[in-house]
Image (cartoon, rainbow, N blue to C red):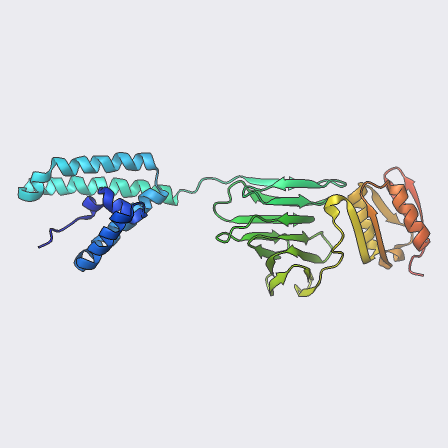
Length: 334
């Protein structure tokens, strides 16, 4: 008849530990066959296995080794008590065993439930500034001017980034086990495994997610847009939360390299882009100018006077600079 086994015995037996952690194929096959041959021991083995996994996967290894060694010594020093011990001797032996096992489990559980404090990093870009940021998982983010992003120093609990305001281009390192999530200040969420995409969430403007490679899913509090592929774009309305899928515009434009192109946008948006790019304040002498539409392109390295001169030639507007303020006049809607 097979001798009874205990949890205390199993958690201190190297071959059983190898079985639980699958670090030795021979031991793994032995205990696998043992469970099949002696099903009456299955519950004890499962309990011991959970203890081993808790201790070795989440515990502090040095403390666990010390407690395990104490328990092993206790077992060997009391072998006679296991066989012939009676009365108080057997009682105190089992009591000591129980205390030792509890110590081991306590160390493992304490490590499991203890969550180290994670530092939140906030990165901002000023007007006229573009910044490249390396995240803890080696993903890369390019932040456009006037943007703010937050992330934690530890991605082991999940790869999460908050783009509170502005625009950023994400080059995500592939990790099929841990999706990469970008959340905007309004609650728009982009999930991805490993790809490149652009997120724009400037205040007062529609939110846009443009996929350059790979596949992403976009969602908010009301809608979900799955399987957004390369060359596609999602536009999110801040008021209705509606998500609209379309073909990505301006695929040749890349603000990361300083090339800025605007396609059929309002002068109001042009105003914001110029302010962010050149760190100036733009004022329309005629407020109705804000609703006019414009298609244009310029480079960040261009002098602002050169950019304004091109707009003047094409749209018939005039401009004058007073300190750090640009005044624009005319009626580009004609």
